[in-house]
Amino acid sequence: MSVTEKIVHGVKVTFVSRAVNMTANGLLIYLLSSVLLDPNGYGLLFLTISIIGVVQLFGDLGLAGSAARYIAEFKESDPSQVPHVLSIALRYRLLLITGTVLAVVLTRDIVVTVLDEPGLELLLLAGAGLLAFRSLLTFSSLTFQGFNALKLSAVINIVNNLGRLALVVGFVTLGWGVVGALLGYVVGAAVAAVLGLGLLYVRYYRSYNIADAPEPGLRRRILEYSIPLTVSRSAGAISAQIDIILIGFFMNPVAVGFYTLGKQISEFVLAPAQSIGFAISPTFGEDKANSKLDRAARLYESTVQYVLLLYVPMTIGVFATAEPMILLVFGQEYAGAVPVIQVLSLFILVQSLTLVTTDVLDFLGRARMRAIAKGVSAVANLGLNILLIPVYGVVGAAVATVVTYSVYTMANLYIVHSELDLRVAYLGGVAIRTTAISSVMGLSVMMLAPHIAGIVSLASVILLGAAIWAILATASGLFDPKETFALLT
Image 1 (cartoon, one colour):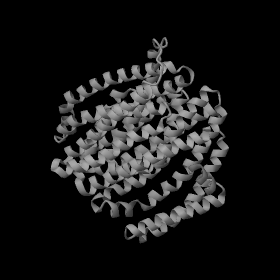
Image 2 (tube, one colour):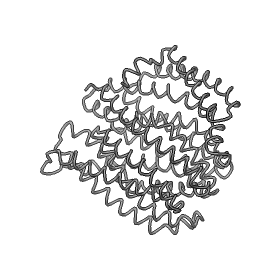
Image 3 (cartoon, helix red, strand yellow):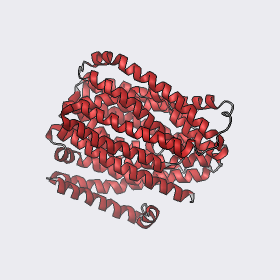
Image 4 (cartoon, one colour):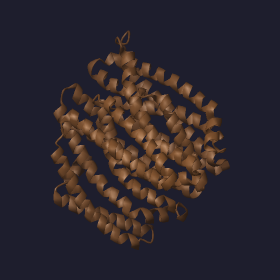
């Protein structure tokens, strides 16, 4: 299988997984927000998940990403070291998870007091289980990435998301309320985590001839490389979750619900970019190990071109259709989420570029530089949220997210350029032409948006916008339908 075929296969496998997960999560978001829970319960659930998301970074510490990097390296140069990489990383991971879970259980009363939300106490107790199983699931998923076993990573993530959907609906239907919804998350992650670790052991750990002892300094190297990954992933977790926690602190669970819905819709449409970034990144590690940086540069440029072609029009489309979409799909009680989604439409664009860049930098060995950029971004995000949320509410939090992620994305692009020597003028030309085409599409959609009166007319306007984009992108030469179809089939 050629490099191109391998990458396309990986993207297709990962995208199928993301598509299934996206559908399951989209349905779950709709059911939780519109059927199963009220805005207060919805906000309380995701306030808990956000707190757990921040605390989980102490149970992860970049070990899985470091293991994936060394797995990708040793499976090419010295396969007998691969089992040692797995066992070292997993032992440290289990130790960290145990300590973090105990910390959550013992300090939950303090969190309840600080946020003045008595309903959090039982939720945080269940959340400790979510932390443990989600951390193990992430470990399996990232180490599969190191093996370039994207199909197995896809399988365990599909099991997690489909199991979560069924269990959440089942537990809430039984009358268990918000606690039942969170338990659905816990049990779904537990099943997927056990499956992932089992596959990792059977398919990989047992299949390698293990060296008598780890290579000298291997433990130290795994831990050392996990440090910048810890910084960047910790900063990422803080940036992704601290805004929700601060909204809970300064405002109330209903406001958390509005903001969370906006972020979830943004994440929903970012699934293709996540698929591409996850699938292509191991190839960059292989290219660097084989001194093929020119090929890596052209691959990254092509990736950015396709991401811009997809997400510039998507950004404009989300902004133009935010109000009718929210009111028609989620109801009038979520009208407060409309301005959040409109501001976060810009986040969709910058985050799409970040998602196809961050793992690439890690596999290129530039995790330290990315960690510095991410750390600065996280501190700035925290400061802006503290300044803007008390004055502008959930819209202020959205503005803080867009500003800080934009700066972080530019820093990532600069680091990639310093490593791969990208053709900046070429990429700039692609960005200008894509923006021009998307602006024409956006004007058409905005003219029709006031006439949207139902789901059918909403879908019709979206399809018309997509058709206008496809015609203009093809006519400009930016998009070749035949080439794209040939690659995907």
